[in-house]
Image 1 (cartoon, rainbow, N blue to C red):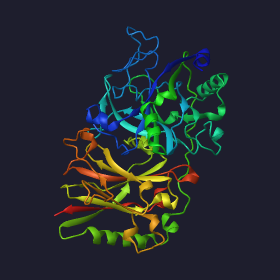
Image 2 (cartoon, one colour):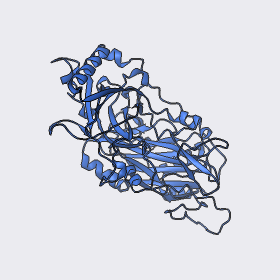
Image 3 (cartoon, rainbow, N blue to C red):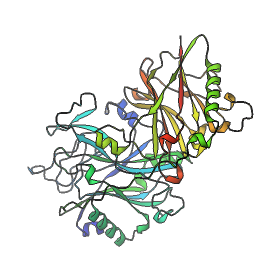
Image 4 (cartoon, rainbow, N blue to C red):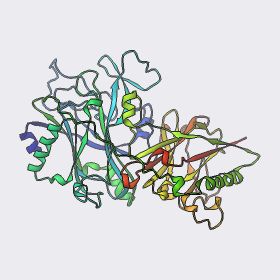
Length: 479
């Protein structure tokens, strides 16, 4: 394959593909915060070498044919950990992924992002995370998705050729990330010559009109992330995350002769929603949730506790909004929705939160949903649970033998269990945590709960916010 690409005039450099342990990197001081990581759900990322003629950043090897004395060398990529996770791209370059999809799980996806972008002249960035590029300017984080993810329902693989129904997990696949239609065609031609079937080749389009590509000072950086969730076999999933390059390879492809732009149009986005809200799917939901609410207050309320009901609202807008409004949208993904509660504090080890609501998986609005506890300061997701564990959790809060009890869930989040057999999500502290500071949140620190609901299956994209009944939370504070 590499020989065919080289014969077509590409400089081929192999990159890396690694799991990114955000909590560890933050705990060790490499990162200032954790970017709203989804607790318990790791990420994989491409790590690319510098482009030909580009200076290496700290921790990187020089690119092929690099002359350190050439005055025309392009500036290095942003010095960010791990090296190569964000990178500038020429408009005529491509990234090529060849390998297997993750092992059997509930979900996987691949998505490219615009990462860091140059600060705009005259705009105040004092309240956002910025980086000195070393090239006479500052960058800030946008981390906005560039379109719909390729997920297990729509990706071309050897198990789902040309996107046909089948099993897309642990199957051969190819992914071309590029902003140039002509380059995509050349890569496909070389792959075909190498014997790779076009039925497993996917396109990841970078819409050139939305980004600022190039290797020069002030150009945008990019990254590609893989998500996977809820392994069928935990050991198999862990092995894949630990050594993904056993079955996957990533390459940076650079034409020897730079080409004029050949942009794609901005891709159409899958439409969220179908006009059917959860209030229609579960007709008595409003009354049922009030019954659950009162039962929670009756069970946990006492003269020794103050109950505060937290408001839930939309947390993150979509990627294109992040790009147009110059916002950090924390590597959001259109396969899900993002909701969060108001900020709050656990003031003692006796404080706790009860989260409750509609099980969006049960209503068909999601293939799974999850809850994460975050610290505001580090944006670190430290604990959570998911809809695979919701079954029967709301039954005691509704009338006996109530037929719709399965549509609801109730979860306790606390510092400790009140009884050995209690189902409870435990939130560790930051100070003195043997795993590192980012693995916990201390008392008297701002925190919040976030909710994600992944993929309404018929649409192959996340549900519409306005068709969901928002998840709810009650904070119980010891007086």
